Length: 260
Image (cartoon, rainbow, N blue to C red; front, side, top):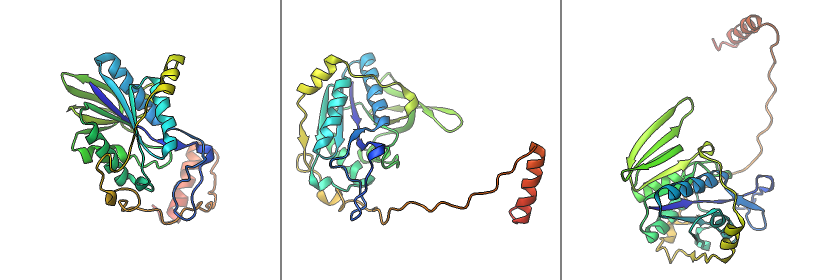
């Protein structure tokens, strides 16, 4: 079985800065970490490999410094890693990112399951995983809390707001993983030494035969117009007392406001 995990290096939440001219995240010189949901995806892939055999390949699209995240993934147990990096990819929105990752995976060729984190901590869109599956034309199951491979098919337990849902589909497929799926392992000394020596190739737009008109800012139909901190709204009134009294008062206030 061949597993591909797509990860993203995100800024440490305490060090987020925005470029005032482009309205994009400043990544140069900013401490970064592996997106936490992506660590769950790595762990899920490693557990499936331990059960079914095969290999785990980790890829990321980003600047040269994103290689650090790939080495951390190798230290956890990934077999291979590839950095997809080119100035043409700068400023990509979720559509352009999905396209670029899809082109890289087409070059990789043979895979059974693609795993992504539920969403990235910096963008919080949860769109890249589903967008990637759409680009590749394969089934997708989001919010996976359990995943099992059975008879060349995939059985996934999904986490919904108030219940679980079990979905079965064919392979190859893509899943996005939630935090509750597992507890990511810590890299051991052997893994750290392996990661230091690992050869991590860098693929450019030319290497993956990407149409640069579909990459980066040129290939992004969405853009950030303005970033600002919302004004703090007027604080509401706090009702206190016995439950029945509070309910009665609340109903009266709603009627007065013509809400009821």
